[in-house]
Length: 419
Ligand code: FCB
Image 1 (cartoon, rainbow, N blue to C red):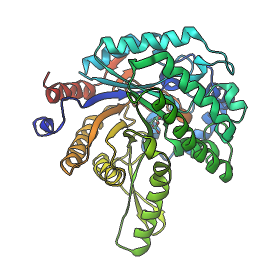
Image 2: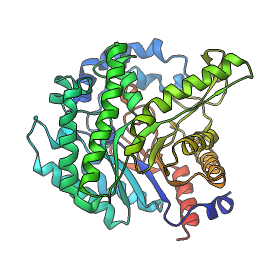
Image 3: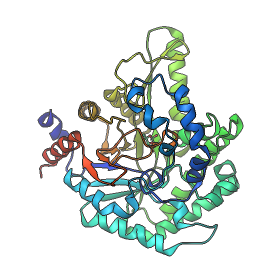
Image 4: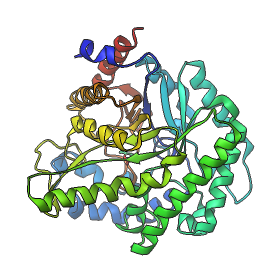
């Protein structure tokens, strides 16, 4: 498989992994840390009836029922141990890394910049560059300063100016040391979890606010991208779009029509609003969805620890569709699975690379693949039990260990890159 995959990926292809500040750094103070402390007990109690039907339940229930699971705390302490983590990237022969800059560290109070934290991220980026690793910076990956959330966050159009100011500050401080910038991670996922399902802070159910937040975030992307491009065209800017391939499970007219409408709402409504201000398209792919009549139903029996049906090869159809429609080069900004036992990760990556290769053969321009995630982290409202890391983290000792699939993936990358 390695030999077959190899020749199609160019020398410049970005091979890497991704994280987000709140999920790995530890020691943050943002709207999530506040919410976690307030909700840990309830989440632990609710796990019993929310997720007890997961195939992994017997294995994970002890952790899922423990309130500590829901408090991020120090996590993997990536904030202090990042050099060690960058060594892991090197061990896997990777040349790219996606991470987010924690806004609450940089601007702890409205309009007050913390220069020490800015210096931290400069050292962080230097440490990547010294290792020959391309930094890919995310500006908003679900965590917000408490002051910003208290002012209504992205519910208010008038608050977007604060985000734009933060983005401008980061770009002026980092200068040309970075090239790839993701403005916002998964616009609709943030909006739906926070303003519809009530699973994430501020846990509100309001269809109107949900819709406002989506529109304010697409507006925020345009504002930020314009201001970054004004500084220099050196920067390559995009959102990270969560995309699932939605297709009819049978040939019924209703299944076909519903799948088309759902795909449009899930992808195109947002992408259309930002694509003119994207130099490439960042795509996060985790799953595909089959539609029967008006219902989504995925009867696969293979599921991840989070009970997500696994169809890694369908990434091909996702990228083919997005490329055909929007004609921007694609970087896979996230892709991976919760798999504590590392039973399926090698298979997942293999199927994914085969899918990407097939898409490339069909003319899709793909510039990079970033696996989610480099290390185990906290999976938002699920807490710490889902294990997405190429490296496992022992939360008691902080020790990282590359899982067997990661060692294998490293050998694949080495061979493909010819190094
Ligand atoms: C994506 C998020 C990322 C991570 C993965 C599993 O939706 O962007 O932070 O939680 O899912």
